[in-house]
Image (cartoon, rainbow, N blue to C red; front, side, top):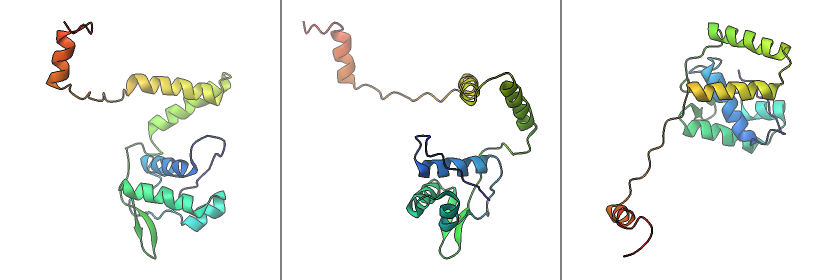
Length: 150
């Protein structure tokens, strides 16, 4: 079961935090297909958020095909994400590294910045293809590169 933690100072919308935490649980194998998500009422009681916020998050997860609502039964996981189980040996290495970073005096934000920088170097985002220019636009720019109509 997911234990949602809402950070009201983060600047991230509450429903987005619920979506992100659910996806993290799916990636780590803490939630697997067939598992039932907590009811909106349970999340509200645990986090003191508006029930509509929880329902909005669950609708977003459903729109993404990750969960399905079953009338009268609840919301259930349809599929998993990623392949990083919570008991992965890599997690143990990362935990050791994080402990060393903390012992060396780094703050959470410092560690996050380092980790984000390393991720960016090793997991580059796919390039977004640019829309092709029309032949009219291309000819105009090629024929008059300085903007001179002559």
